[in-house]
Length: 25
Image 1 (cartoon, rainbow, N blue to C red):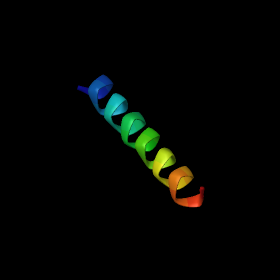
Image 2 (tube, rainbow, N blue to C red; image 1 turned 60 degrees about the vertical axis):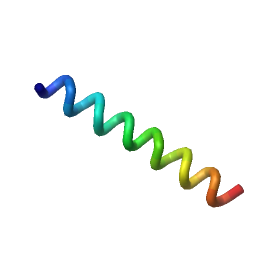
Image 3 (cartoon, rainbow, N blue to C red; image 1 turned 90 degrees about the vertical axis):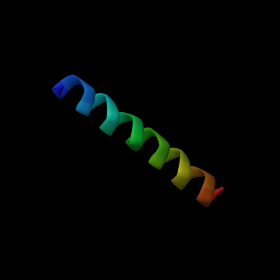
């Protein structure tokens, strides 16, 4: 369960970073 939570958090953080870069560019 903890591994799944860590994977989900890292995945959403990855999408969030892409969203910021796309917004800046």
